[in-house]
Length: 299
Image (tube, rainbow, N blue to C red):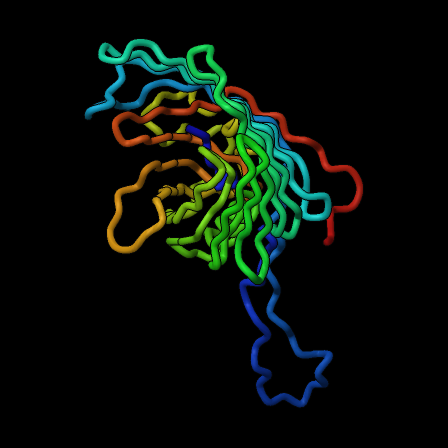
């Protein structure tokens, strides 16, 4: 089970077009034009989240859960985006015993969101599963995925499909614009590398940004301290619930739901990973943001 951050989770689109000019004696150069929204800039950063059980019930109930997620995200719209994720999860259940999974995922996404490379390795209870390795491209003709491992294969989809970093930027754009939902098809190379997900994001109102403010979560005053101390305390952010569905028509139950606070620079906090029969909280314990040197990227 991978952490899907709408990773974002992105080529910025204008949130307003040119206004119709009203009759005026002023020359055209003097007429005001509406300001365009600033491009979404995702911060290169390393984030560490400690995992703990939030709730459990149903057929796959677990008695305890712990672990850690480490995310290294680097890049920009000129160079593309590289993300390395490692998620170690230890589950205890009276019915199935102890399960320890160690998942490592590396991806690269071009700045224009057209090209994607992915590789995933998983070790479950000390036994390695076959690696998932492939490439994908999303163009006018739809999505094309080429798998190298565990065996050569190709899949495709005729519709518009987003990769994780572009999806993240679209989420920030929607939040900035005051939109409350965003639906999109997403491919992130997770699971067996063949799945395209229908996603629905529900976006809440922008949260207050006051340095040192107490968290709204009931998980405790120490949760996500790196986001409440220092520069991140004043970065705009929105609560988001992002649900993943198998492709299809009609009403469906999400196979996975990620609840998080989406920061304007792409950092995510207040994590909750809901797998249906149990849910896990992610407490950010460390955040390192890379300083940008020189002029910003202008693709």
